[in-house]
Image (cartoon, rainbow, N blue to C red; front, side, top):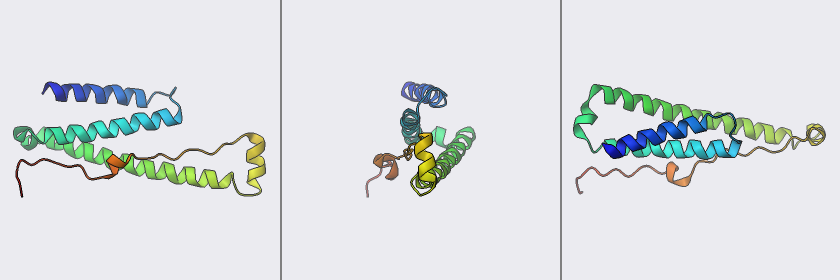
Length: 128
């Protein structure tokens, strides 16, 4: 459980960094991607402990983490939709003129790393 303790400590540390108001947009995205990867790794690692998997508290934690992942995905979609609308609005005449004068720049989309898009490979200890 030492490794899991280190992973949880790292998750807490990265989460604190990700919510820091001093971070630039791109840095925040990088921290959130690292956090998602760590949470995924934690869930896969815990599946190696059958007693823990059947524990009611862990089942509640697992459900909460799944809900959080769904909320993060929904927030990413909402953010990217807003960025899409914003970027379009500063490129379309006549708002482009005002955007150029005011110095509005295009925003970047929240990109999800390819390895996160793929389904995680879970070793169940059986061979088929």
